[in-house]
Length: 220
Image 1 (spheres, rainbow, N blue to C red):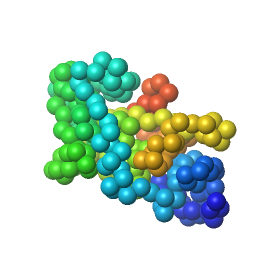
Image 2 (cartoon, rainbow, N blue to C red):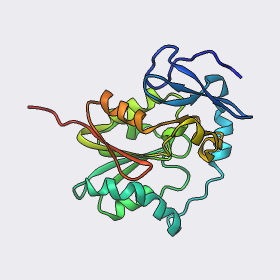
Image 3 (cartoon, rainbow, N blue to C red):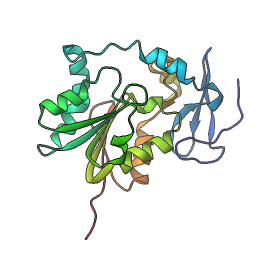
Image 4 (cartoon, rainbow, N blue to C red):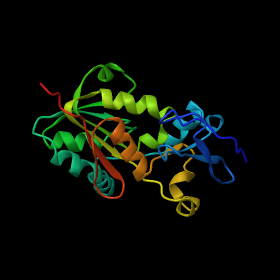
């Protein structure tokens, strides 16, 4: 077990992450500044291992159960949007469904996924909304990736994140979510509130695993 404190990959505080939990696969650390939980950089999976895991996902737009799952993010985000909004589904996966749901609601959606929609052209535009459904827990460089998502929003735009939120050590010890080898970092409610403070906004918790952030409008 590695007990040496690490730097936090989210808030970038030095030696702020201390050993939090270990299982037979890896050690986990939690930051004392932003309450972010993560694994050591040396334990991050390879690109090839990630791709093998993601290829197992079989998501279909005709799967009512999967649509119902995504509705936990779709409904609260869609509620905030005027008709005809332009959005980006970041980490859209091998079978994009969330983007289709927004298009069915009258919006326009671009896709980006480093494995399945790797064209970076959409990352050079601004959007009224950006969604990341079951994506942020995969970030190897969360500060860099989340800063990118935030930068893609127009003033007044919405960032919708769906990810399971980590609790205390006792709950974490039996938490199935940590067992996916591609889940390498975990956000708590406190972490999301820290992010909102960094971005000078507020976080709206919509259910147990959906967080919405609105980019502040420009003051004229």
